[in-house]
Image (cartoon, rainbow, N blue to C red; front, side, top):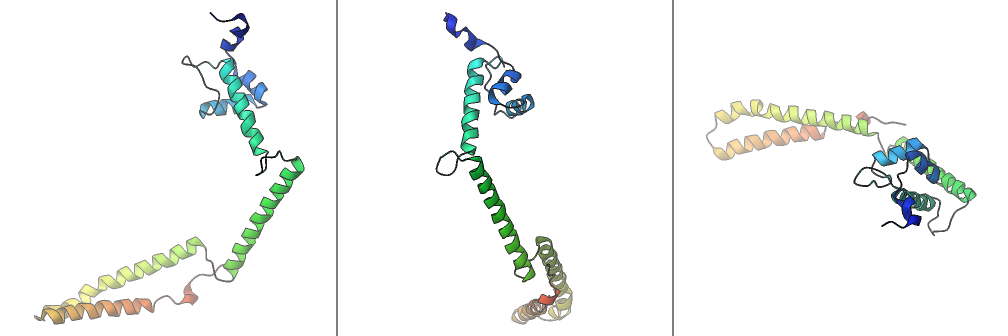
Length: 176
């Protein structure tokens, strides 16, 4: 038997009521519910006063934590604004540092680096695939395995040496 003073606990509540209690819009409460972060529902899918009240308290605690500093003290609006300005200034300083590194050639854009590496890979592949046709005529007339190995080794080393002399730094795109 339910005590007469506790009958309201089993009462169904609407999203409008929850929104009013939490100081949110009905749409925002709906977003929380759809995301699974809203008030818990019973097995019948209905939100009851107890669950809604618990969620509103939990929401208020989470919101209050956002307004607290690292030491747990509630920060004033001025302190919050100062903290936001500090974060903005730190972000601007980081952006400026990156721009300086780009201008000084210590940093290049990822797309430029990818383009240079793609060109290098294509050149290596093309040059390495030329080796068999260049070496085959010499290898087919040799019966000495050591000499065949030496011919192939020399061709590979020549190709790699040629490629290592490849892209001068002046050809690497610079930005800034």
